[in-house]
Amino acid sequence: MPIRPGIDGHASLCPSYKAVCLLCVWLFLPFAANAAVLPEERADTMYHSYSGGGVTIDGPSVLVRKNIGDSVSVSANYYVDMISGASIDVESTASAYSEQRDEYSMSADYLVDKTTMSLGYTNSSENDYEAETVAFGISQAFFGDMSTLDLRVSYGSDEVFKNGDESFSDVAEHRRYGFSWNQILTQKLIAELSVETVSDEGYLNNPYRSVRFVDPSIPLGFSYQSEDYPRTRNSDAIAIRAKYRLPYRAAVKTEYRRYADSWGIDADNIEFRYTHPLDEQDEWILEGKLRFYKQSGADFYSDLFPYANAATFMARDKELSDFSNTSIGFGVSYRLPDRWSLFDRRNTVNLFWDYIYFDYDNFRDVRVHDGSTDIAVGEEPTYSFGANVIRFYWSVWL
Image (cartoon, rainbow, N blue to C red; front, side):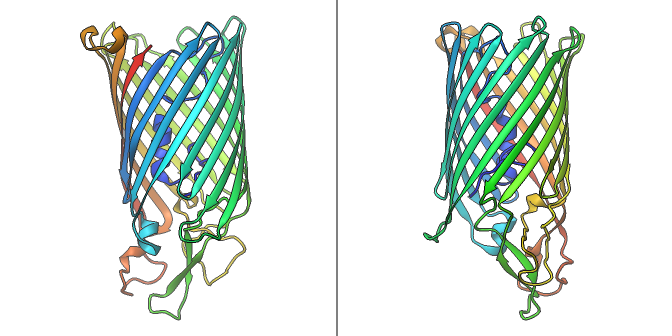
């Protein structure tokens, strides 16, 4: 199944995959977050699990980051998604499925005075999708390390196949350009402004997905045909973030992100995080999160087209509809006593849980028909579901 850059900043295999990636990205970020400082040496072993909307995604991930001297940091990450189940789209037009996605990534950071240059490579493989991405970034600290400028660019090349159809093969390319400015405003307040633009070209839809259209010739009243998307997509996003340290050593983080693209989608994302150490030694750390997301649908999206081939481009992917989601999350980190620690180093165990509720305004649940015609075509109830995301990992500082 295709993996593409997502509207709200994560990959777009399905809502489940986007949720998992977003909630884990801070741990497995391939580039240094601060200029003039190399990332900490550490090893992380994680298990992640998503369950919701008829889909289950879980698997392990291993990250190792090591410094070479005082100026070079290298890392390697192995990430697995084992996907199974039957989402509402699959239940409507196909049978349940299972597959595995394996992702390998490597990165290197080179520190020179107050400048950090980063280079990364990622390879993702499924039985019907191959993706490769190379990325470069540069960070520069200014004004006594009070300000940090970060520039980044990446290029992705994907190959798309279709199980059961050996003649189908296509490609997609993704170019991302990003800029961010991080500013220490006071002793307690840090703010960041970031801008990103993405250019996608090639096969950008899912070869298994279908649209439905009114068909009076059959008792059910509607039929299906394959989706057809434009072969180009340009998107822009701007985000403002802030982190404030409270008097009792806790911290509040906020974020607002605005997204718009050439397909007619506009989206807004607001997020709040609260981090609270329970003791002076940071042995126990609690975290809470609340996130709201809302978007308008693509210009060529419709839950029900009036007839076959009704438009040049047609989509019924619920992720291109008008929808919103709300997330709440809780987490706890515990620093292990020295007698339990590996390699006589600092060890932590971390558990995070998120609940995400998806609510689709104009994507209807056609499963209510179940072969009957009691409900009129186009009058089916709109679809919604909840999902649980769990991440458990063990970290060792090398």
